[in-house]
Amino acid sequence: MHTSGTQCKLIAMLGLAQKAGKVISGDDAITKAARNGSVHIVLIAADASDNTRKGYQDMANYYKVVCVEVLSKEQLGASIGKAQRAALAITDAGFGLAVKKLCLEHT
Image (cartoon, rainbow, N blue to C red):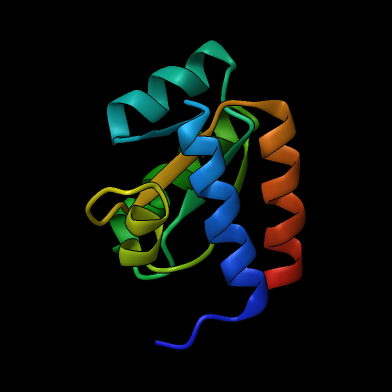
């Protein structure tokens, strides 16, 4: 799969955020962090199932969190050095803003 320059930057930014301990994954962890107000952006894999996508979008709308579809499950997982991930959340304002900007460039 071809990865654009913006995708490469996004993947690198997610890797930095992961190393800084500012990325969470997993439905329960993301929902709990959103409930606590610590999530700045939720990234959903473009190839996530409709149910998964709807669940995260509804949660993001309810807790007023930005939610963006980007990359594939494989790319999201690889960006943080893990197996496939349907969604990731960024818990730092600075990384959140940087990721939002890259997502806008990507779309």
